[in-house]
Image (cartoon, rainbow, N blue to C red; front, side, top):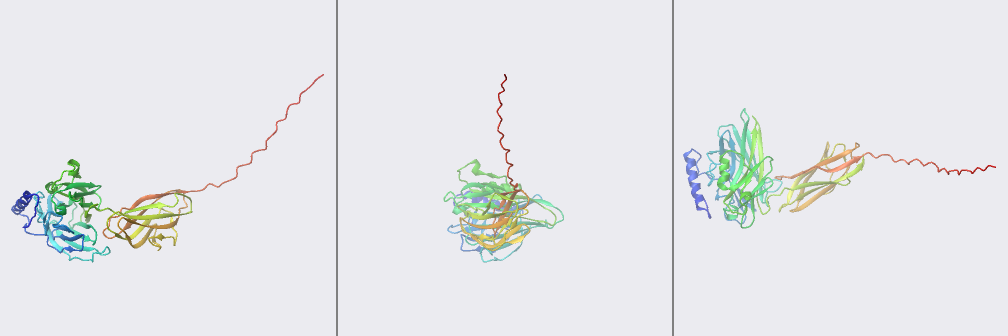
Length: 426
């Protein structure tokens, strides 16, 4: 076995002891490695290994070792599921003895790599495994677009039984970022990261599916949290011991109830970047904030890409307020083609390329409603492997019913007072 531990020899000893204990409790053979078909590319993620039991290892251009603790073909990274009092996961997790007792997934199938690595057809590997004889099955799909510093993982958990069941789905790993077993923790909203003390590069789990919880801590505490079969508690050692290096790991968890015959899916990005994954965002503004009923107005939709690599959108959508109608031939900017109109939804088909740290915009005209009121708007965009932050209930327009203007009545003519005539007698 080729476990590396340049800074912590004891960790390798723990890994060996943990594997021995797994054999004693009847787990799958610890000799199994990642296996499967690797995604190889020009980088910056030069190789993404996904095992037939979801174990993973990733290689970043310029680094000597993989980004997860372990060996070149066996990383301490993977998918885990806690179901009905049993924890399922990869057969082998280097130095992952705290994530026990654990029953290995039963591999079912894994596809060859498909796609050409472009945004339109990313490299894709799909792995299927059973949770023993429970009637539950996971399908994990990993996709990568060449040139990006992140890859997408989606895990679907299918219930083929006749009863609903609650489960905890984990995605986690023991960080070995930039050839270092030590680092810091970091939390950005719902995303959690290990941070390299050498360069500040981060190894980030960025959730796409809502409802996740996170954890960053010592690698053994992360595995122990999974071993407890409880969801992560949103804790980070960066809050408790800021600035202190530690041999760390991190990950995300989701609690889901899977009804009989149903499938649930959770997704996230794994990012290796100084900035981490930064989602493209959509903003929208109205030309005029207050107009008369049935008058003309217009909107501008802007998509901003804060990331370090260009992205490709396959569409931009807009949900017009009730009573508003699109003005034919009015689109300018990123495209001059009219959108497809379905009810109140407008859709402009791509592809639209947004440069790194760049923006694209389109403008179009509308006729507003004939009913007075305040109307807001929703706009969004989509692209392969992208989580876009849309603009929801923005760009308010106040539609008013003008009051007819009438001339005020002329004032009455001024009346000159008549002076009293003195009266004389005698």
